[in-house]
Length: 364
Image (cartoon, rainbow, N blue to C red; front, side):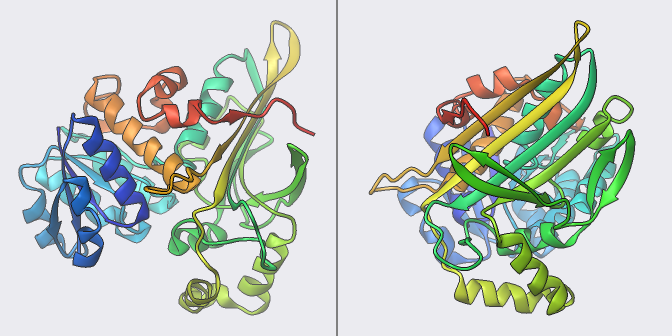
């Protein structure tokens, strides 16, 4: 399969290595940064310098490609999806942006090619897990989805290091959060709904953030009493972000906040990803609960280290593309994450990154 991979950042480079290494994909990585593309020379993929914000230049570059994998910043998702449609390409991305996903769904109506956004960790894998668990119930009560990408060794007051896109991080902290409460779809406030829990003896907090549910609100509407998604952090992080965004009013000056974080908060490759889903409801006349809890750790290989967020995000989108190539997903139109079968995902050569993680047996 001929694949155009847009974006040569940390995640894009990991995707390129996985697909190229499989031997089943002809990958061309496109980015406006020649320096970023140069880092892929040892991988052996084709590279092309393209202004990815210029729709005409992008269309010219995508002609002749079968599939587009969009690993660019979330604000380019709609533009790239439109260009993919025009170029006759299948489209996959990692966006967590709710508005972008709704527009991509509209773009996909009647399309002869496939459009599958939100193929990362959350939204993405977390929705596949939640839907899989939910299917085993006669009636659903509560579906709770919790995900955190955290530094393994937090040292600052925020107890956080940059592990992925600052743009995506601030976006999910600032936009309304879809959820279902008492059977009604609502828009909850970001950073609200604070809760605490322990996992493997470590204390965490969780709070509302935007986008993590993907399309599950729509899929489970009328079938579940309560459905929500929250981001996991170490205790104290939420209060400091509330102070920055609201008390200091940086929500209305997000570029300043992003610049501060980029300059003052070190990135880390030493991270851990938590995936924690609980589903309760009726089965066989009894009220029961199912739990899926995993920790995925960074790969500390000295020659090619990978952060946990790189591993999980790249595995998510590579598995989606691979399942599509194998004919296990619809060939055209809009594809939801929950249309992926969890067993098929975990059996996939890329999805195995989650299978090989450490399952958490007990939760306090």
